[in-house]
Amino acid sequence: MKKNIFIAFEGIDGSGKSTQVKLLTDNLKKVGHKVYVTFEPTDSPIGSVIRNIFNHRIEADHRTIAGLFVADRLDHLLNKTNGIFKKLEEGYTVITDRYNFSSYAYQGAHVPLDWVIEANSLSADLLRPDINIFIDISPDISMERLHNGRSSMELYETIENLRNVKNKYMEAIEKLKFKENIFITDGNRSPDLIAADIWKEISVIGVSTNAH
Ligand code: ADP
Ligand code: TYD
Image 1 (cartoon, rainbow, N blue to C red):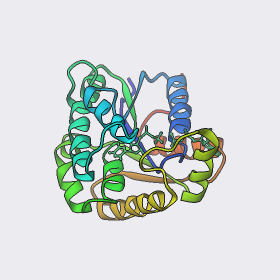
Image 2: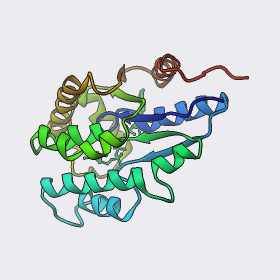
Image 3: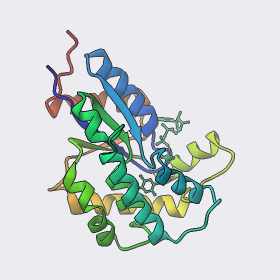
Image 4: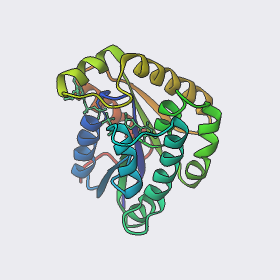
């Protein structure tokens, strides 16, 4: 029986997370894993409030947003119907598009990073990903990709903010490198090369990557 694991994808907006989540899911399924893909902000009522803030339908302070992400993440883990713990118990390998590091990077760009780390310690201590995959791309490339793909930009999608967020990711990664398993992959390459890099790393953490 293959061990089911918990994988988090991280990176600035447009870094290629959704693309790589899909490629990794396909690869894992090919070798027999049951895969459950999920994301934050979630589609729960708490996640909807967050999305309404990002769409400028509701106004909220950055500290309030940070608190909402703490609550959304706890529900993401603990929800009895479709929470991450439930899915892991059911034998799924769970891939989440964003987890704790997104709060460190995005909220840490506006409120003190140590506070954000502390505020998220309950979920971090409950469940750390077997691997955090950080797709590292330059904010300029990210901005180009986002402009090509969309007509309107969300709250955090300005070049200055993407630069700040990237810096906060690096700061948080440095701070937590002994507590968390973090794999950094160069996202300024073709999707296939990045996917191959990730697949190699997944085998390093002990997941069977051979079909049989
Ligand atoms: P995210 O989920 O991190 O926002 P996406 O996977 O949606 O990123 O990618 C953002 C855009 O960039 C999409 O239009 C996607 O097709 C494109 N893209 C993704 N990965 C790459 C890559 N490695 N090289 C070039 N373009 C990419
Ligand atoms: P998402 O819908 O995943 O956007 P994208 O596909 O562009 O990555 O996430 C929406 C926004 O939520 C994104 O700009 C990052 C932000 N976010 C935070 O600010 N803090 C968090 O803890 C999380 C999980 C996301």
